[in-house]
Image (cartoon, rainbow, N blue to C red):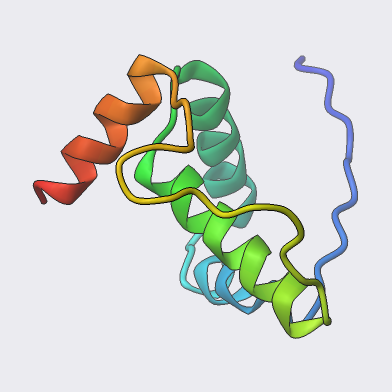
Length: 95
C-alpha cells in the first residue's frame, strides 16, 4: 500500500483569486496540483507564465506603494540581457 502525506497550503482570497478560480474548476484538486507542480519542476527556462507572474508581482508591489529607484535605460542600451532571456522576449513579441 502506498504511503501518503498531507501538505497544507494557504491562499489569500484577494491576491490568489486566479489560483482559487483554477482550483474551483478542477474535478480533482489534488491531482491538478500535483500535475502543475510536476510540470513546473520539470521545465527549464523562462515561460510566458513566469513573465505573467513577475508582472503581477510588480503590479502588487506598485499598488502597495513601491517605487522605482535608479536610472532607467536610454534608448538603444542600458540593460544587458542574457541571450536566452533576450530570445524568449523576442519570441513573445512575435506572438
